[in-house]
Length: 61
Image (cartoon, rainbow, N blue to C red; front, side):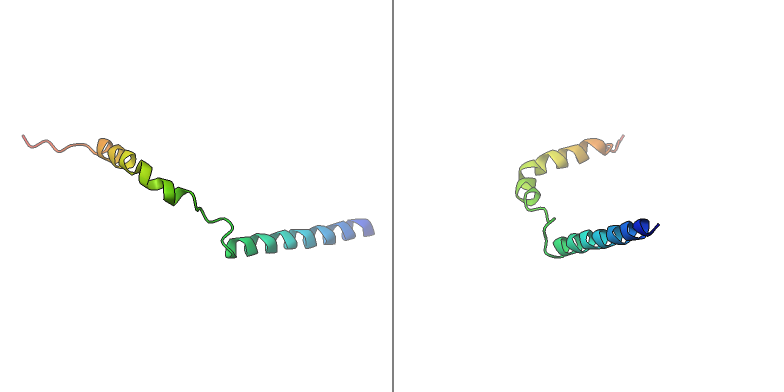
């Protein structure tokens, strides 16, 4: 039974270490997207054309 308590304690410590590492990486900008903003201007026309096609045209007659 004492082995179960030891394993639970060790697993909680490991989980807290991973949580700390994850939060530190997020704080330091590890997961910031540096690629998409530089490419977004290349595909800007396609997104505008899609939104224009999706909107129905008003009938003036």
